[in-house]
Amino acid sequence: MSIVSVLIATAVVGGTGAIIGILLGIAGEKFAVEVDEKEIAVRACLPGNNCGGCGFPGCDGLAAAIAKREAPVNGCPVGGEACAKAISEILGVDAGESVKMTAYVKCAGTCEKTKDNYDYIGPKDCRFAMNHPGGGAKACIYGCTGFGSCRNVCPFDAIDIIDGVAVVDPDKCKACGKCIAECPKHLIELMPAEAVCHVKCSSKDKGVEVKKVCQAGCIGCGLCARNCPSNAITVEDNLAYIDQEKCTHCGVCKEKCPVKIIL
Image (cartoon, rainbow, N blue to C red; front, side, top):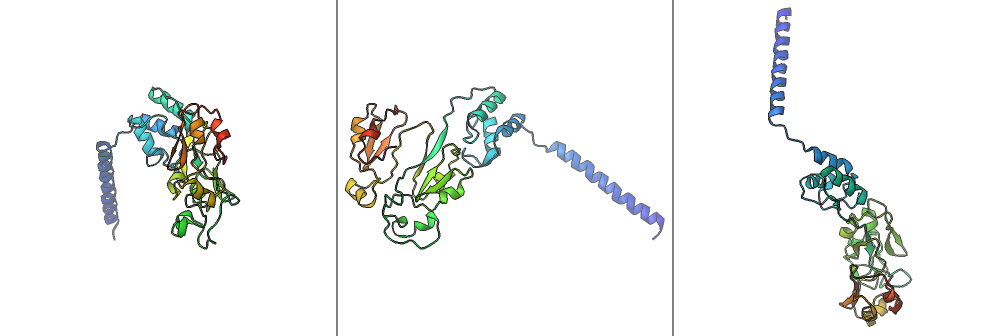
């Protein structure tokens, strides 16, 4: 091959590359996606856990929604008040009131207080246990299985299994909601972290049936509701419920509860 042929081939390749580069540059300019600077700034304020607790597909999704005014500035449960304040300053809006929430397990049926119907043999997984009679070995079909599926999905190491029942550390909990979605018995819900009165039970059986399987279950007697000075308690399906917006934290319900299930 002569030197002329090599030079011609080099020129052709170089020229082709240059043309492709120019065309790509033009296409990049023509089809460029506009970047919302506020969205980028909002995203920088978010913690980046991508837990989904906000209801959007990760922090990127929430940042885009907040920048478009489709989500509140305090929409990140993990970032909390500090995050909401930073975002509100970027967008020039009021952050509004932020109430710290925490997950709460509505069961006090520890190994000492509840009975087992049989010896469970199988994977230590709450969803798998639901395929067994009673949703697991515990005699109370409403009670915490205690295998820790909620703990396993918690990205903040906020849940421990203590004496057969899941317990949430409110200082670590970021209210992302993963444990709520994971619990097959729907025993976990979000409550204001400042709420001090909780009914730690989910059984809807009548009192006599509750006492047969658990020493700590709500018997639906209604003493708490009848003695509550703010009418914050109702009894539905044999189970007491506390309206946290009405509750004044007076503690009367705790004193009147005969089974001491209000904590």
